[in-house]
Amino acid sequence: MDTLIIGNQSKRQIRERVVRAWKTGKAEHAARLDFPDISDAWKVLSDKRRAIIQAMAGQGPLSIREIARRVGRDVRAVHSDVRLLHYAGVVDKTEDGRMILPYKTIKFEFTVEAQKAA
Image 1 (tube, rainbow, N blue to C red):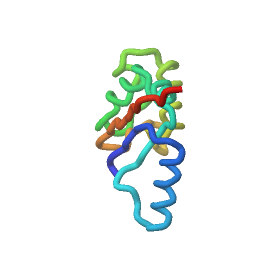
Image 2 (image 1 turned 90 degrees about the vertical axis):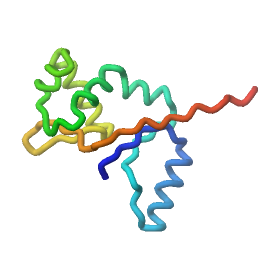
Image 3 (image 1 turned 120 degrees about the horizontal axis):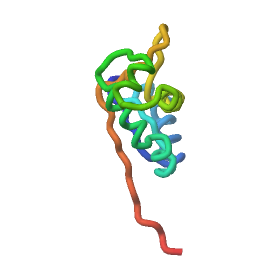
């Protein structure tokens, strides 16, 4: 898979997608990272972290120091942000400790629905 879709699906939707894939044995056409709540997505995908993602896109393995240089930020702060992106599954770590964005395409797919009246 060379595409990552980042979006907001409910826990029910996520569960249904996983069960469907398990029952059919068919893999999804793209990797997914879903947040049940949009506010959680924006916490993980802050402006600075999105800048890191953009700086890493298509660049192959990069050291934390090189990523920090490309985004013009402190190495420690970038290290913390890259570690969070790694834990979230957005970036991978190579055997030699460098970081890589393994996707050619990242799509952001967020849905905002009207609130039900109380």
